[in-house]
Image 1 (cartoon, rainbow, N blue to C red):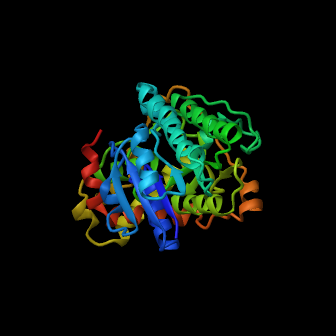
Image 2 (tube, rainbow, N blue to C red; image 1 turned 90 degrees about the vertical axis):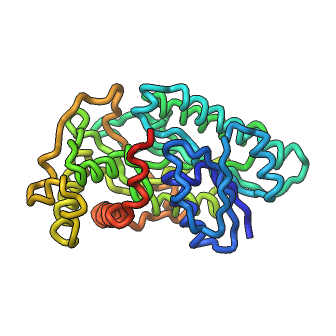
Image 3 (cartoon, rainbow, N blue to C red; image 1 turned 45 degrees about the vertical axis):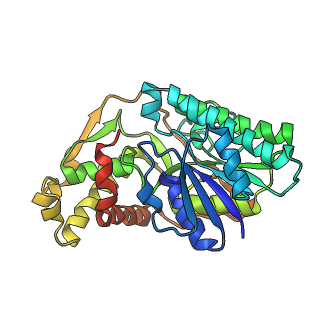
Length: 352
């Protein structure tokens, strides 16, 4: 039995991790530390008996030390972060505070409890990061590897790059046993509807425009969130302290292809699922029209990276990581989850 502190565990990826870990490690206990900002949701982890939610800020070092001490925590899985690029452009300060100062606060608490106290106990600090720290790729450039130089292009990715460097430094300077994973674009259940897939799905159901940045040909590697959780599990159980691992989905697609698939899935759902037209009368599909009619091109985002791609050979070779979801079936499952869980996302539409 192990005790874990999961920061940001009421958010999208963290919440899915809580469900995944509870299912695959039922004897372990999790303390979920979450500030419950707009992207945190209590209902995401309701019913997970192995998890206890503590509302608090990762920048509160005293609170973190108390949780580590009182719950005999041996593992920190650090998801908590501001993560939406658009928000980082309009308000970068929150990203500096949470992603850099918050990570530093966690590292200080871990160092104090696990190293400075002289316990010498086995421990692990796993830090979840992003492929965006590597910058943008050209059409023919090789995919990001763990040795790709950092070149962040947004306040969000810059703040994550800084936090990655802090984690690395705490290992090399103080001996803290850390691992870091850099993931590609996640999708799946419980994702806050500001990201592309849930945003476009819910806009389609409400008959609202589908805003496409630029020419829609920015390329991303799409990773089902359950596969990401599987990769994190491999980092925790097989990863070597001080190492970083790229976790990808092996599904490199332009945004326009993703959007077209969303439109097709919505149209198909209205044909196959009874009652959708009554539930969502404003959707074009409710009137027999194509969801693609809602596509609208808008001015591109400032500093919009053109292409991301993940080279995951290290994770496969050293951790045995292999994604289980292909994008087509994963997207279909995700859409159906949102249709079946309206009670989860409806309250979020008014949150900012």
